Length: 298
Image (tube, rainbow, N blue to C red):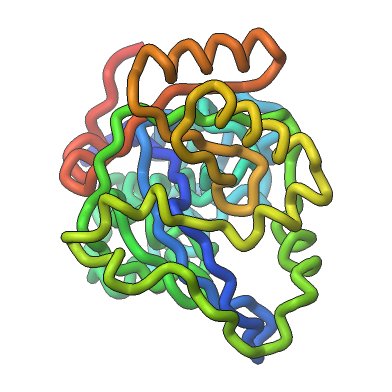
């Protein structure tokens, strides 16, 4: 039996995020295109006699029962009737509350690692249901690559993959309330707005055009509450990005660049101005599945 395992907990961006209508259950129906990128947290999970513990090197991350990775472990243990415990240690590289899915990714990583450590055999559908109960983005992090998310985002369908080598993530250092952003979308009255992103863009022959056609319906509301987001987007465009868009509910904005030199120069300038900035590339499903348990030392 394994005593411990290490998991890469990848970040994501949203190539597009359309808020379609408010549902009867109070949630919003969305259509989004998720994408895993090369930035990741390191998660180490160690078998323990019976308790579940979480430790993290970032003080902004709660390490109690409210932590999503803790909840993932507790739900999985109850569902599988396991008596063993685990210590989950998270080394954060993904900014907290930044629209990059760090907490959801950590939860999915905990599920995957604990399936190994606790020797649990569950079907893919059952695992997806557990993940969906934890959060809207968690099921995506069991799939990776490029995928369309519908419903609350938890219904995940892999699509033709987008490959981009030069993406710059930039964050102004503010945390956005996802609930607050959705609450400010007063235009949502129950009817779906007209979409400007045709379904044929999700087909294999059109998916490569999506980064230039995408939109984020939460961006305007988030920027109204946090003008720093709009400023980051403006800076990315002025520094040579061909397209810039807020990811998720923010506050991270990603810029797509044609050349690595331009991307790295923009990164240096943003860091010098006090922003967090990181150059990443897309990670496809094959690489995602192949490397999730393949952590380099250090």
